[in-house]
Image 1 (cartoon, rainbow, N blue to C red):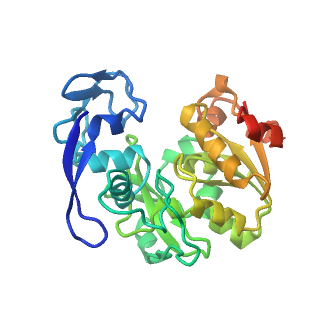
Image 2: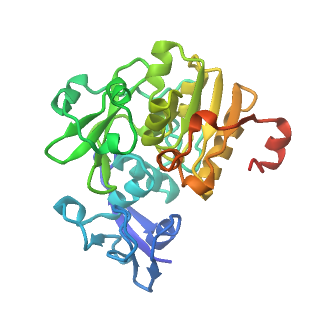
Image 3: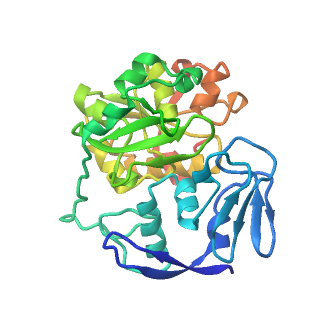
Length: 332
C-alpha cells in the first residue's frame, strides 16, 4: 500500500482530506519502460511519444516530475492533475472519482463515476453552458490535424481552432442543443491536454452529438477519441466520441434521445478498448441497432493511426450484435 493523504476542495470549496492509494491508482494504466520501486514509479512520460524513462511519480506525496518537458506547466504537478490526464477527464471529475472511491462523500446521484452510483430519475444533471464567444479567440488554424488526415471541411464543421498562446488546438464540445459545454486544449508538440475551467463534465457529454441532433442523423459510428471521430467524418462517416473509455448513463441517454437508430462501434485495439466496447453493447443492446467494425491490428491501434497507415474505414466490414454475443461477451 502507498496511501497518501491528499486534499480535495470540491464544488463547495470546502477542503476534504483523503487517504489515497497512489500506487494502486497508477497501476490501473499502461506505462512505457516502467520501473516500480519501493518509493516511486519511473517511466516514459505519458505526455509525449517516447520510449525512454524521463518521468517519475513519488508515492509519498503523489507529485510527479517530467524531466523532458519544455513547457513549465507540465514539468511537475499534483497527483490529481496527473490522474485527470490519465483518466481523460476534467480535474473536478477526478476529484469526484477519488472522493467516492475513498469514502470522503457519498456518491453524487447525477455523476456516473467508476462505482456506478444510483441515479435518481428526478435528479437530472445541470446542463453547463459556457459562452460561445470563448471560441472567437481561437479563430486560427494549425496544420497539426491536417497532418493527421483531418479534412479542412470537417475542422470547420466542428469549429476546431488554435490557441496561439499555448500552441494547442482547441476542440469544442457542444451540448445537444448546440450550446458550448466545454473546450479541450491539445498541445501540438506533445500529448498534453486540458479542459476549459468551469466547463461541463465530459462524463455528461458526447463529442459531436449536437450535429446528430441538428441534422437528424440516423446512422453513426462511435469511437473513444475526438480525433478518431474527426478521422471517420473526413472519410464520409459521421461519428461521435466518448472522450475516453468511460461510457456513462448520461452518454447513453444522449444517444437514445437522439435521431440515431444505427450505431457502429470502432474500438481501439487494446484491453481498455474491449472494455469500452462491452460497456456500450451491454447498455445499448436491444435499444438501438448496434454494430461492430474491426480496425485491423496490422494498421495500428486506433482509427486515426490505421487510416493514416492505409486502412479505409469506408470498406470496413460490420456485424450486428446478436444475443449470443451478449451472453459470452466474446465479440472479437
